[in-house]
Length: 445
Image 1 (cartoon, rainbow, N blue to C red):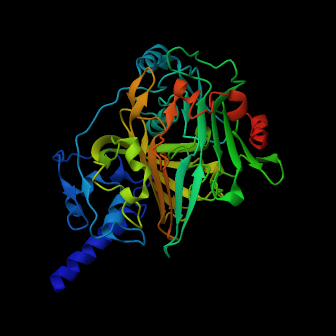
Image 2 (cartoon, one colour; image 1 turned 120 degrees about the vertical axis):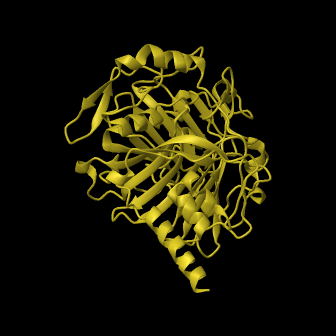
């Protein structure tokens, strides 16, 4: 019995160390590590009883969920089944743009300690990220990774569940339209949309449910010049007008969830000039990338409480990832909510699949999981990033969680590009409506 108690104590101590933030930017022991573990066999079943054998394939937050160190934890009957790994190469046009333009990309040093880009046209800015600034190059590649130029949800929207430690849950429905207007790499599209007006990327989201928040909208506009701060507009139906939010308010909750403005867009929401990033190691991690989007529209397909996908329809696979430590540049750290964010970014497609978040005192705070579900894009075949996703944020300190699934209860999943021009009778290919501040007021027509 004493030996067993000592073993449990040692286990909890090691988990605590894993999420404590000891692998900081300046920590020599954490730098330049290559995780070398044999591949997991297909069909391997990982449970709360045997997870420790597979910890080398897990981010720190996943280990915490298995170990039960916080309120949010996997239930005793939880199973994660390992399936085959897949490859999803970016579209040919994106690869061609990478080869054609990446050599012209230059890093610009900015006053205050940040960095920007010059010469970027399209494709991956840094196809072989290496020192100097390897970590920052990986972060920039994540921002400019291939995404379809147009992403639109079903008109009934994403489903969101906001949960607390007492078992209370609030349900939201939020349609969205995300659009790349510059640096486009889709066939038949110009590099820059004629309607771009200097905008690189737009993010529009509307609240349909609950009723008291209906027609509220959030629009974020990122500019082609990375050094120009983004604009954030919030449309308030009761006021019948839009409010322009401060670009410094990046810690504010996003439509009342546990995501902040800096977390949406599946984990990293840009502003590359505000960040420094240090490469820590390469690691193979378990993530979900292949599933039928129609299957995850029902909450019954998830474990209760933690709302994690059940193995009956979701098999996890190993992905080679870069692990980077991301922090605000020193001049912008005072007053910022996060001390650091440890990001796990896919080496093939640069999707962010996991993020461990620490508060300003470097205590573990949140686990953010971004399961990007590969889906067909018109004319491009299967792609790793399409807006079809399951994204979760577990607030370990306060016992909150926010879960988003991109499929509606009827099986309506996210569409892309030309398929957005008539999605259940709605034309989402309307730049004036979904990518400009003036378009927000049209919701009341």
